[in-house]
Amino acid sequence: MVTDDTELALRAAAGCIGGFAALAARHQVAIVHYAASMLGRGGRSRCDADDVAQQTFLRAQVEISTYRAEGPFAAWLFAIARRTCINHLRGERRRAVRQAAVWRGAVDPASGPLEVAATADDRRRLWDLARRTLPEPQFTAMWLHYVEGLPVVSVATVLERSAAAVKLLLLRGRRRLAPVVLDLAPASFKVSSDGGSTYGV
Image: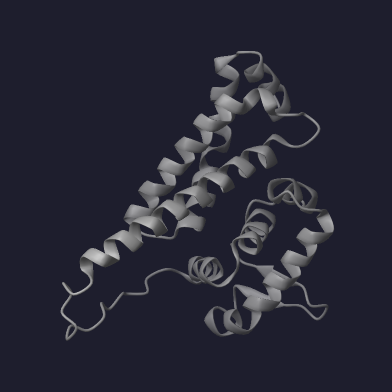
């Protein structure tokens, strides 16, 4: 018999190690997938995504007693993952600033930029573009809603905003991406007559 997230979370909050292990196994792939989308692609980013996912579950285990069964466990967990990703990105930016001072002057100005092969398929490029183009709350709202399938009310829980605010984030995100995405991957992103969009993921 499959136990739902809420029951497992309540067991974990009561000290059941097996309950939390079951939750971690159930949501591991989704959290790593989300972290990778936030941090970018590539070998190092995948390692970073795994690290962020591990930190997310460690933090969730420590904070499991704060979970309230009124909302979906997935929304509560994604909220932790989002904060962990943001903290990781802030740390990366600080490291990049320090490293820039070291590399400045050491790089041959005559050398051209590296040619990077675009081998990702349209769906991956679409979400990489979204990550680079959209403000983080818009990106997270669209990822959780269109990829993870979370309803607007759950996305609102993750972002700590109202459902109306999330709907506005989704609308603005679609409108901001549409002109570029139609050229990038018209088969993966279609703008409907009512201003909505469909994503191939």
